Image (cartoon, rainbow, N blue to C red; front, side, top):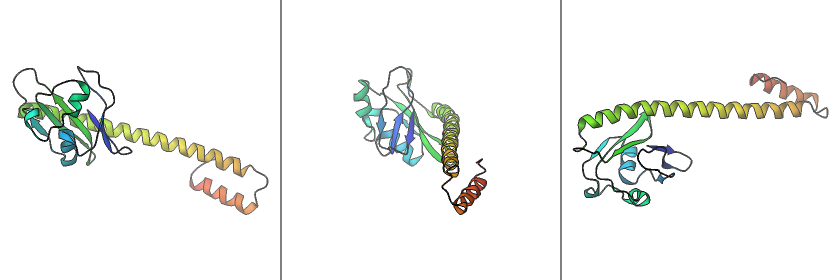
Amino acid sequence: MYIYDPLSQSLTTKAAHGTSIAKFALPPNKGIVGLVFTSQNSVILPSAYMDKRFDRSVDKSRASITRDMVCVPLKAGGRCVGCLEVANRRELKFGEEDLGLVEAVGKELASGIVLRNERDAAGDFLKAKSRFKTKIRAVADNNLLSPLLKNILMILAEILKAEM
């Protein structure tokens, strides 16, 4: 699974099965994962090394060989948050039925990722708000402040629904 990191503007691995993967990042326009992320369209790749769009650098970094793969966008809330890739089917080749299953799992994963991101953002906001309230309280407690400045800070605290 690759999750888009807007800070580094890259798709970063977050999970793997069968191999131990260190954190690996790809630009969002590179390889099949980048294609799926930017186009938001799923891809079935029956023969990875025969496809010019396939980027072999991930295989080289893992010392592995991708034979075939399915890659789907992780879409939720009207945006793509990453990609889910499944590779090297043991029997036969990936087909449309496999694609449907991976897309269904991807949809659920994307919803979970969006919820986690929103929860993390809310937590960051609450922490910042708490730090801000502490600073306002420290400034307001300073006896050197003019009455006008104290009133401004009290109004600000009231707007923010903060206690002084």
